[in-house]
Image (cartoon, helix red, strand yellow):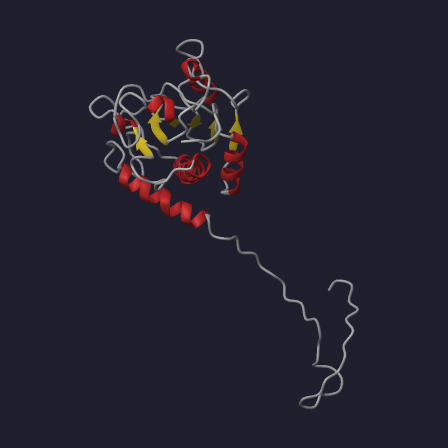
Length: 248
């Protein structure tokens, strides 16, 4: 596994903005990782992990302050954060402490996901009642998933598809019985339970395919030569034409 020690947040942001999302790169985010992993992704960034914050997200700066050291200096909890308004905050670029004990899952070793995951925290109380009711939030979550994993696969040379459970998993998949996130009413949990990550991964993959389609633009037709005026040309007639319109 090879690739840069830290995810290039500027390039990731460029791709997400191209997909129509509002992205903020937090001051100091590029090059930031949890204190045990200051060297960055020395094993490569191998997957993305998905979580909820157990907060309302009403004041994003407060959540971000906690995610970037509220539990102690260098205690970085997440790389990305998405509050209810749908802004995608990129707040770190290396390994974090989000995943904790769990696994193995795919190529992530037992208790080893912290070192190899790019982690996202989604603002929600996670009580199964607080809904992911803001379309901007769920749209941004899905867009980040659709843009992030193909980008990581490209940069770090993943040999397998980027939308498998090996490469994109919820906290409750990494640590079943210990964690429940993401949880709550959403397009992936109508009953308010833990998200159906198979559906989430499928939706992300489908969106990624749509985002890869070339952008279509309306083009105003331009008539280079108007043969409707003047003398008729007989069959098999050849005539030299000089186009002098400066707009052509």
